[in-house]
Length: 449
Ligand code: AMP
Ligand code: GLY
Image (cartoon, rainbow, N blue to C red):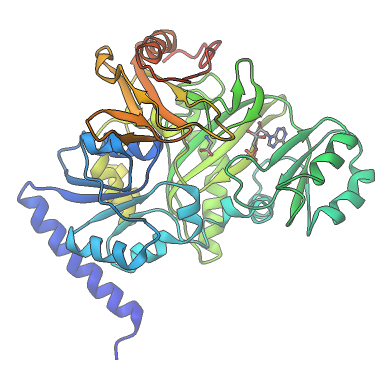
């Protein structure tokens, strides 16, 4: 019997010959994107602008994606069905979008089918799903971050409040879809946070409260190779002026003055490359996208968190800015040839700015009301795009609201101001009952492209 690793190698070699034969015929590769929100729309949209991508499947996708991609009807968690699809549709490349699928180790499952996969192993993705692990790795790798302490549960954390006196950031240690963090200005607030979900069950991390401006730095990571993408800024709070509850993201802009485009690679070399090397040294190399949530403080950049995937809504404003052949770039990353590929084709960033304004359904982020018909999607000006986040097809044609972050209005411009203005024209043109959005996305962002 051949060992499993040997069989995997043989299958990979076999795959490679298939891919080469197909690409030499000019047919390109078959791509599979896992996930179904605005980020996955942006990934598929960017792939669709590459001649090298022949088929694009998005699972589970959303109704809007059916405009230009295939949306096979099954859950990405149905592993048997997924493996069957990979074989039947002759998928060459898979990109795993959302944090929960990454944390569940879907990339490991896909890699066993011997295709190219953009997405880390479950072990490497621990930089996102365990805050304690991420903090330990940052310490080991010498990445600047907030002072911190881990606790096994809220009771243990409560006992440490005397020592932590005053302001403290309380974090639930695990995937919490951006909702597990409470910034507390006093011990009283921290006590309340520790008594409420999700911090009241499971491990907890305390962090020093940092002050400064935030930005999102994403990089393609293949072992020790780290290639920075253009930095972006998202807007997490529900209301204008950064008020109200945290959300999955109400809008985004790229470029940003917090980390200028020309500083992106240097900053990624400082804040992302050391943990990429530490993961290699631990025998769990990362292959996919590392996203660092960064705060620019008076003392320099500090990493607030890592994510093991593209950001949402950051992908919506950064992927349109990436030049070159995106499918080839993703295939190189998925096959572990990123260093070689970028040596030959250095990553180019477009000089245009992009802004994303998210149109939300009434009740978001708590209980979004679904079902309202959407109009105006066909009335967007040239160069303004509707990246569907949560839409459903109406039986008679057209789309209805299918979830909280319904449509991302994404617009480009020669400057941030121009992109922003155009995004808001689009945001007004698209209509549905209960629609709301922030009116200050990218306002005050003075970055020049
Ligand atoms: P995280 O999910 O860890 O990025 O935290 C979500 C949000 O909480 C961040 O975008 C920050 O706005 C805030 N936050 C997290 N950690 C800190 C910190 N140490 N100091 C100040 N704000 C923080
Ligand atoms: N925009 C933050 C995230 O994707 O987690």
